[in-house]
Length: 270
Image (tube, rainbow, N blue to C red; front, top):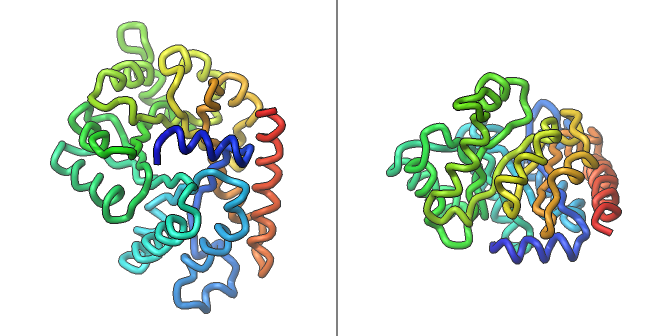
């Protein structure tokens, strides 16, 4: 999917909502556990109930890898279901990969070619040659961890080297990488006050913003400091939406929570 197609979807739906499909078998409704593939059935119900309200889905691969080959099969069925039924929805493999060049190439092939995700999250700690293999894929996007929403972000990301925070070095250096136009960045909603400076460095890039909802991030603050002329934001909510209900009406409850966020976004866009 191209950036232009993503922007068109945002404009059509009046939404820049991303729903995180982070499925924990200990949290989904008990009646689903009787089915052959409870993870996929949970995801399918959430997708069917919310696809008109969001522009992106983001499965965190850890929640699938934890269940071995069965979990990976559930992930494959989930991405295939989205691509076949809602091809205009942007898909994000939240895998946080990043390794030496030939290994990164294989990671990229796994998510871009085999599973046909539109994007994948990547850790930039190993530098250029660990990220550029992802950037080589046409019409695919690499989402670099820049400033994350967890408290541990202060351990390294905000520390200063030569009077400049590490996350700013990451942003500035990444702009020099080959095919950097295919980069997006993760910036946590709990760090909304940093967005003004971030937009000075990457004014046109899309930002994936986790942390709205369960982690306490504020949508209005994120939009105030982070929105650009193309919106440039994908606001992710996972637990706050998918676990809104825990009975047979769980998908309806998820849709209601998604609708609340979509309506706020529509107001902001207007």
